[in-house]
Amino acid sequence: MTVAIEFANSEDLRTALERWLEDYGHSVHRQVPCPDGGVVDLLTPVYAIFCPPSLAPSDLWAAVDTIQARQPDFPDQQPVIAGLTPAADLDAIYEVVEQIKAKGIEVWLLDQMPPFVEYYTGLNAEPAPPVPEGFNRRNPLAGCLISLGMAAILSASFWLAYRILDRHQMQMSTNSQENRLWEQLYTAVDVWDMDTALVSLERLGNSHNPCVSEFADRFETSLRQRGSEGFRDINPIKRALNMEDGCRLEIREYEFSQ
Image (cartoon, rainbow, N blue to C red; front, side, top):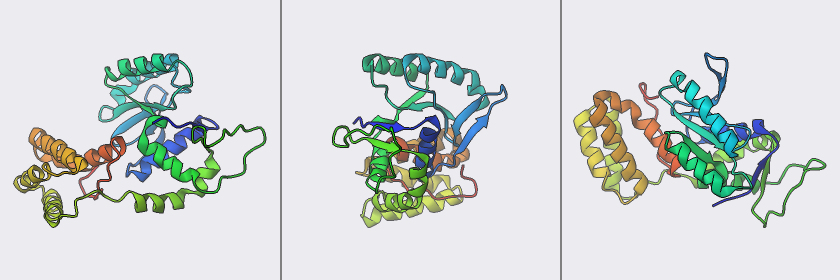
């Protein structure tokens, strides 16, 4: 899915992305300085996100160079390049994106990520703010244009929080047995009970809900590979699935969680 999304400037894009991440449970820091004097545009416990001026091939490769120079400063975060799909040379863009992904760097074409598009489609359903003189707004029926500035994001923030909570509840099975398995897992995680956690995850791995089964597989792998330290991965795994795959896994905070 591709939706025409426009921002007045790069600052508005970063603000939109920051608020979207926060609504998915991420703790976000902006413009985090690097030892060499550069910055990471958005930093979370999971991602180090760079927002170049555009996602044209030249800007993409420049961002790759920047990430490779700064990645040692943030070894625990997945590097990401984020922005909007350029209007021209799409075949060249997609080819470059695949080459960059092969280097272990994610590229987020925000207007092609369904959770991001849905988020701002919902925002656009609210009464639009006054359009500044000279601003070119396309017909919303021709591409569902979403044009957002800082004022719109701030004015709708509380509405968004409740709207998202209402529309994106955790997609758990209504089956009481699965609910009990979740509670059993949470109790085990709270006290780092490895045996009980692994039993719960094995059963949750059979869930018909793909988000639940994928979470169980990833978390079980982490526990088996890292031992007790793997318990710290429960929330980062959930946040990653919530954002990347549009899941709605509940985030519970623990004293040890990241």
